[in-house]
Length: 374
View (tube, rainbow, N blue to C red):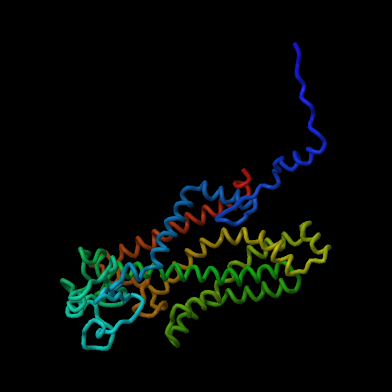
């Protein structure tokens, strides 16, 4: 039996074969079009594997994105008005009544039957899904406020004759925005302070810890009460005060991780190569220190939402009339004969906290090296 032997490849083809061979080290992972490291890819896979946290994130994002367009969902002004061949957008622009054939040069009152008749004579109006605003009273209620849920007001009205569903949508948005802003600013300040203390150590760390101990001992609630008696609190006042006393929570995890990482071999090698302290902190130590911080952020967000609701419930939060879940809880306590107020606030806050806790648990498990490496 004869066996046909193939000629070996020529020497000049060897480099071409070597270039065509795949290299395991050149595998690139991408997420949303951006390159990510294999460690980040493994953590992302661990987060997706946690179905409860993964779907909680999508549900929370869907609710938050919808609340960003609250003016198009709940408003006492039409989204679009077509009159005499021209289009108007009352949601984003102020249109005088004279533009629709009226007599007053002030903004048109679209709930007025006469104004509606003028517009419908030569055009039409497109109303939001909930044709009521969070701040204006409803004048055509069937009885004294608060009124029970019906076909017009799906969650009823409060004791000020305002639509509860509209106030819930706007209150959800302002609570999440307040929480996100608080997490961002406290995170930036706390991470920067913890990074500086852990990296430089010595006298910097000693003085920083003593200042933090004195700062956290100040009674935040009493300061809020004193400030509320001097000035009218608003969104930015509350955010500034909460940031001033909330950044200390991020210092501890970042400081501990920086103290551990500053003596590792890659940091010493960077110093030996003459890399500046700023580059070492930002490019080498900060990514490791952010692991503990990221697992901490969802729980800080849930705490910020509860803090705002608590301040509004006590009367030291947002100005009167602002859409607030805490103010809705207070109305439920003061109007036990209207259980829809308390139940609406309870379920809204409960669902929001549940979603955030599930997301936080999934993020914590994703960054756990014992689970992600397994």
